[in-house]
Image 1 (cartoon, rainbow, N blue to C red):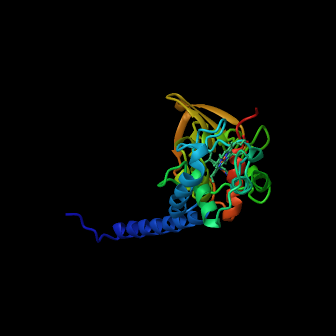
Image 2: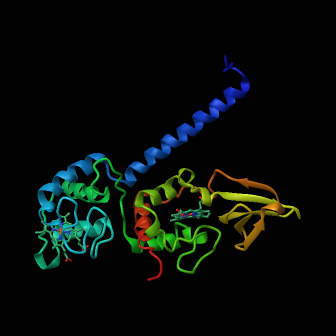
Image 3: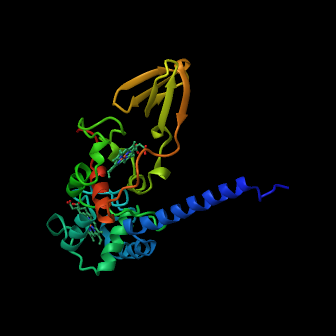
Length: 261
Ligand code: HEC
Ligand code: HEC
């Protein structure tokens, strides 16, 4: 039998409860950053009645458009979608729809959830406002590099719109700890010459590790020269303090980052 009453276990138990508690708060936090599952389900019904006739059950029957996968012609943000659905498109080949606010929100939610009633539909805001927040108030550009501009201490985001889903981008902003990828874990290395290097791994194989140090220098180290090598489980950044509309705008901007074309 294990003795659960040792002081040591008690302390660990208290820590565990504290972690759970913060995580519940975080989970609640995401709620106004995305559409509810009721909205998605209601939107599915609107879609079948009003849109499927032309766009098809999978959203891919109009040339060059795939609503389920989020491929549009001109639209980027949720407001763009709102505008197109309410005003029509292509000189009337898509008619204007006079939907109630909940129906309009619902059909956008359904599109953003990838037509999956149990999916996650993250709100997508305006990329231009998002870019301004990225470079200004959001302080993202203090750490991240985009298209050759900015520091190298954090991952380069020039192609992040091709690599990540809206849901994973949102997770990184609201709860960096649970979004931390293994390769992005901060490292602290002490070498044989007693140098301490704190930074971010770019690459690692059996014999070497490449690190960007805190002064943005690329360091390639032989593992035989390393005395201690610690990989942190916690991210080197805090959850963003931007509000839900601002987060939606920043996600809108990140989705447009698809490398230099
Ligand atoms: C009568 C046929 C028709 C119906 C019904 C219809 N659409 Fe369309 N839709 C089109 C056509 C055609 C286009 C392509 C416009 C173009 O070529 O620019 C389009 C384009 C779009 C686009 C992309 C616009 C852009 O510029 O990025 C979206 C989003 C869209 N439709 C959503 C919807 C939704 C949501 C509904 C239901 C509320 C709907 N459509 C109903 C025919 C239709
Ligand atoms: C203090 C520096 C810092 C700031 C400020 C910062 N980040 Fe990060 N970000 C990082 C680091 C470091 C990582 C790598 C993972 C980690 O350590 O959390 C990261 C990871 C990311 C990722 C995930 C990259 C991937 O490969 O999936 C995205 C997306 C991102 N940040 C976007 C942003 C945005 C948008 C902002 C502004 C709202 C921001 N970051 C602000 C340091 C920062």
